[in-house]
Length: 420
Image (cartoon, rainbow, N blue to C red; front, side, top):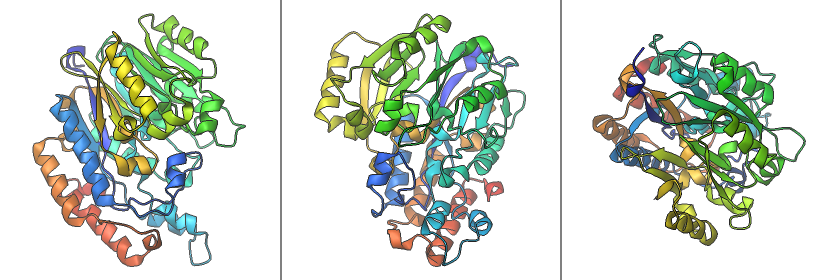
């Protein structure tokens, strides 16, 4: 095995696919529902995401990417026998580009936390929603190529469909540094509210076992039902962690103080940055995706929070962030980014990325972003991605053929045609 000094956090962002549209398929995702039926801008969305990736690289961070999944999903349409009598939502599900939110792609347990000293990745089954539940096998196909070296990685199948698993969006990791042994926190929900609790406790426990997480390094915490009710469909909408820091809303967990105690029992160095509900309401936190942000350690050791531009446009959120920066807390920089197309479909900066602690040299280099690949991706997106998709176009045969051909152009350009 490589020494831990070679392990760094790599952010793998999902490239927004050419079928990006606003179908409003995600019950409980208020942003997604509120933009249902709007015109989408796939080209702009993909370029916004690529710009965010390049901005991370400019900060000196390792950056990878995943490619859009095959859409429309003809296999799903065939299995559901979709014809002119079928509910239109089934067609829209087969066109979904939601795999761009790679925080839901898998749960990643780095080598220092696992019993066998390998980095384990378990794709999320995402069974709560049809448009997401179709993803995991194609996601696993990419993971098995990107992390094919079994000296360092183990890629599993998803947990059985009996228990819903939503991936890294309900998983946090605490460590003194990314390459040191850490503590992994699995956050689950309980059913009963008007919106589904997508992460099942048994799924979280099964993922921890699949990933061979040392039991002494695993903590299981319940999400606050009030947060789910307010539209925090994943834990990363109300809390985000990085190294020793937990940045969280005061109403993120079912028992906030007990959650802190449970983490500290395994990781005494925990530093909590809590946003009070009377400063930023749950509704405002969810609207701006203040916590669906990337909390990053920069090469100089400074911790930075990458937030959507919507945070700067909220008086309450921006005032709190300015106050935080004026203090002496662990988060020393706030970086707004424009990901409006993703935001309108229900995901902030953190949704677009999966965090993998590994030696970048052990990853298939076709998935690691550099200037040449960024230029290639930008060229293909600018030339082939649809500029707009109207709701009435979803299901159109001509557009379907264009979307398929467009993805094929990207696979050819990146020498990844085995994903065709």
